Image (cartoon, rainbow over all chains, first blue to last red):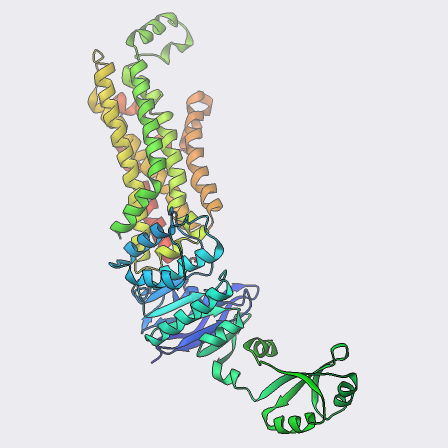
Length: 293
Length: 261
């Protein structure tokens, strides 16, 4: 029995907006990525999971409890980072976190302190004047501090710089190790690739694919970019029997699609050339994603 | 239906406005009581004897004077301002801004969130009126020691004021619960109570405009009936029922609607 299960869920806002017949199941301990462009229906799906909106048909179930009817019960297990960061009126971040802890019935702030330290956040700053990144960090602390079993994160890394993004990724990995189930949306493909076990793609409100991240990373079709030292080599190589994705004469560069089975043939062919550099262009989620669109 | 922690936080967040309004009301109330001089009225009565104005001041008493000033204007418009701003900020503005997401990502039921906010609005108005009543009683004691004042009638004026504000606040609260955008919640939640206030004023200007009183909830707070021994219980009951029905409806709507959080 999956921990989170969405079955045939539909919410039609008209004019193609909304989500249509969504099916998802997330196992306990899984890190699940939910990818799609803006307006694809990511946040609408999350709002159903949080019990903020009622599905027109179908259902969302967390730990065998209905997300709409038993929403308060379910929220005991969930930490939530909303997609849009807008805090209640509180003078400082510390005060906001303190009030949030009161509402959660949290006795100790020790776990909050740990996360604050890891994110290098100074919560004593004025809440309204915080930078986007600081606000995001504060929201992350608020979601994690009660140490909930499930994390629902709507674009959690918005506004974070690359270093903090890496730190956040390591926090997520640690939470996963501690047995947490994580559901996160993103349009940052790298981030999903690094953290998630499984990824679902949503487009125009419909799920178009659900894949384990491994499967995408260990794709057999690879893309290489090769640069030659001389024009002569470049021209000569251009006439070899490979599948060229792109040729750039000005840089003496070619881009090739190569299946792993052909890799030896490629190296044999390259033996006679003066190669300046060879780079594998990672087959990213982005690319996978694009090929689906 | 109620959450102590939210109540505490809501009191804190709205304390400033509440204090300012309560203070202003107390000052106006005390001032209007202090400046009243029974001679002024008898002098006036002499002057206008035989003119059409005569029946306006007919049998004017201290409480009649207070009812026409404080309990028609200052004492009504000030709490109205508090209600309009606060009702919107309690629900609609938090949904509009998205900050409600933090309240509702805790295991507190929606019904408890909205119930607590309603309880706050009602309590804050009640305490406001109680404070003003006490200030008024003190002022009467200090400034009008020689005037004969019917304290029961004075208290009834305040009970009526509270019931009127209870009913008015239920209108603003209902729209705050209904709309996800502040501007819509304010358009109706502020517009309707203000219209009620103005209609009542209009009705008093001239007999030909009297019909306006039927368009106003404020007409159910009939100070003349209270002071002249007329029937006011039915009106009080009506205000109470309107308040209860609209508050309950608002809470229901909020509990069952879709929230864009």
